[in-house]
Length: 181
Image 1 (cartoon, rainbow, N blue to C red):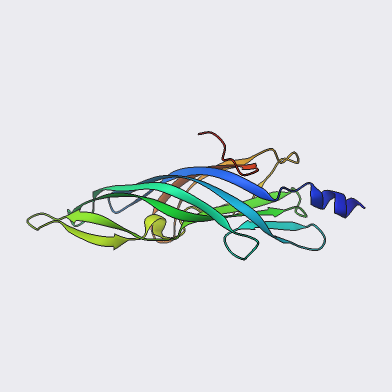
Image 2 (image 1 turned 135 degrees about the horizontal axis):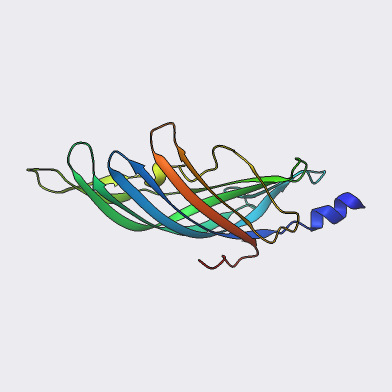
């Protein structure tokens, strides 16, 4: 049966590597991440496949090396770095013409950063990297993928609604081993 054969061609697991920058108010966040995503959804006709983020069968796991530095509009120097857990998602839209995908990556925790303002003692405050969801496809929201599905990769740069300048790139491959840098 054609639908059954097509269904079996889609991997159960994808591994990814992504990196990027977020700039806003004189501050620059830099990051790189590796992660895996497992299939959690497949509609009955094989038209779409979802990987990652949530659900007993569809977990994702990974880590991001993250840092922030710069001087904000108030003249305060901000700095910090951390290893942060991330979740990721990959959606394959097999019924679209051309066949397309969407992907995103999100930190799941905040971290502490240091702020040194002129004439004041240094302070630490809680910061949520990537403003929660800056590493997501925006315009366009989907990209075509090659029928071979040997890898899915792309890059985008955009200005988020909240003013951040975002640039990021990703590459995913079937299996549980992330692609080399």
